[in-house]
Length: 248
Image (cartoon, rainbow, N blue to C red; front, side, top):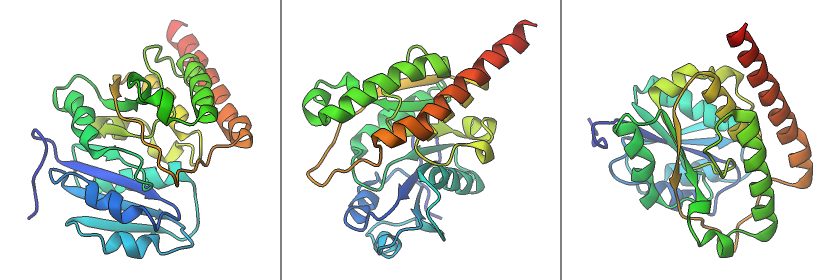
């Protein structure tokens, strides 16, 4: 049986992908050899994403397909559930567009292996390169959302809330009620609030910002207004309610 593990952790990488036929194979093959399972979740793509991912030159790749597009949050949840079924100790997320540096993965896993955190997330702002690599509009929006998420999630020490490069322990995945996760954009903000409500330890890890010539963002002004603003308000209200109950 193929088992390599990382510092005693059995690791899965979840790759959510929607119409990523041009990048998904490179993403899959870039996953480090120490990863035990690669789970590609094709979120109702209209192209050959699933076929290309399946033909990528890497062992232990499993393709899970949504019949219709459900959203990036839903795709990640599907991957997390499959990872739990496989009995992993940790599940990382690497987007199917190839915008995450695989050499950063050990840094995300180390706090879990050292029992210093239950969940880790990338922080591109700890790299000076972010100011020249991240598009200006994206930069401004990310700063604003990161500041708001500090308030709504309760994790005042975190930044770069929209960074999707993450690693979760099995304990964290079992604690946050995956079936209730917000399915689309706004998922990271919702998850951070749920992690805080569960009393879990979350740390930021420096990662490299990567934006190629073909980079595109699914986040627009409309996306920020809804659903992200809705998720932030709901998270804040839930945190206040939990605090009130604890003090009552």
